[in-house]
Amino acid sequence: MKATETAAVLSPALQDYAERKFRERAEIYAPILSEIESGLSCCTQEEAVLMRFLYGTMPVRDAGEYGFEVFLSYVRHALWLRDNVEWCRRLPEDIFVHYVLYYRINTEDISDCRPFFYERLKDRIAGLSMEEAVREINYWCAEHAAYESTDGRTASPMTMYRCGKGRCGEESAFAAAACRSVGIAARQVYAPRWAHCD
Image (cartoon, rainbow, N blue to C red):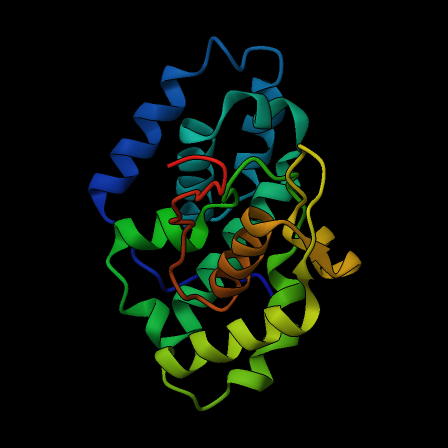
């Protein structure tokens, strides 16, 4: 996959929202704002809009803990999917930005995992309907990670893949990241069930 100027058209509403939310954080981001602005100057118009969207809506702590290039990788991959994957192209824009583009699923450590997962899944889901692809991705996730209780930290989807185990919330974040990596909108939805109470 190569990052190129995308044919995706982002709505004026999203462009305005992204700019407004980003500007609202200018004071908070003051120590790193020049670095962010420098990165934005090297982006295509669509990349810059989505980067502003991320910086304007992400947990503020993430902006200080992760570099510009990590978020840009998520943006470029999402735009590539929007241009090249039919089911992603058909998504409403709000669903696309929140459940395909967005880099965070829970409180996991952020790593550049989407292109990595895409490369492992693309041949496996080639020619399938979206519903069949979701099922196949679920099988792939089950083959690569099993349930095991872990400590209080939430492992990243890449950590799940590498170590092959994690608790239920980590398994669902892994599955959601795998779906997003191929342009299928996904998020965590679950209700905890504790055996010791109602």
